[in-house]
Amino acid sequence: MLRQLFYDLASLVVILDPVGTAVMFLGLTPHAAPAHRRSMAWRGALVATLIILAFAFMGQALLEMMGITLAAFRIAGGLLLFLLATDMVFALHSGIRGTTGPEQEEATHSRDVAVFPLAIPLLAGPGALTSIMLLMGGAHAWDQKSLVLAALIAVMALTLATLLAAAAVARLLGVTGANVVTRVLGVVLAALATQFVLDGVRQSFNLT
Image 1 (cartoon, one colour):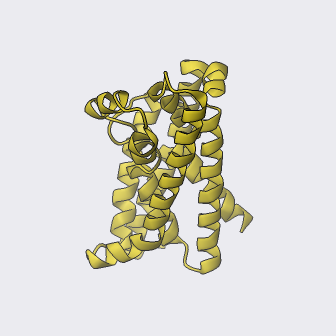
Image 2 (cartoon, one colour):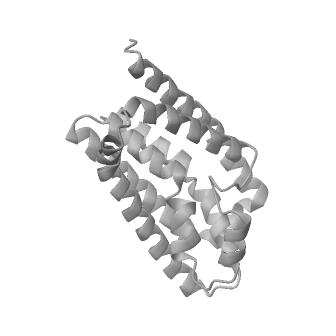
């Protein structure tokens, strides 16, 4: 169980990238007062957690309603996460990982970025939603599902801590340091995405 918990923790940390998200959050709130920035961090993390939890519990039912097998979703999800890993390795900020140009411009004129773009798409983005559905889909017993949920809460707590300390994180690492961390996590995520695809192929063709 400890091994499974570590796997779930590592998967979610790699995908949510707390350090990189904190640096982006600071860039979105350059003129915000410290108290307002802390308030946005708390609300953004809470909203994102609720959204991810909703996908964790209802994702499987949604797939069944649409006639999509878990194997097909594993393959598609693995490919999506591989694209996300590519963005991370090359330190890109496309729509799959961060905000697009128009979204960035809209956020710049907003005084509150808690829901958009912090909660969505920086935290509860395509990568996080895909990953939680894959992890919950691979957990067959409730004790395994509880480990996934515990890992999610722990990683979201870590993410909230980095958001609250965003200014300190940026001073400590700088842009280059944050990109180094993101690139390393991107390599790990690429391997994880490949494993999801392989698991989906094996499940589709009943390979052992």
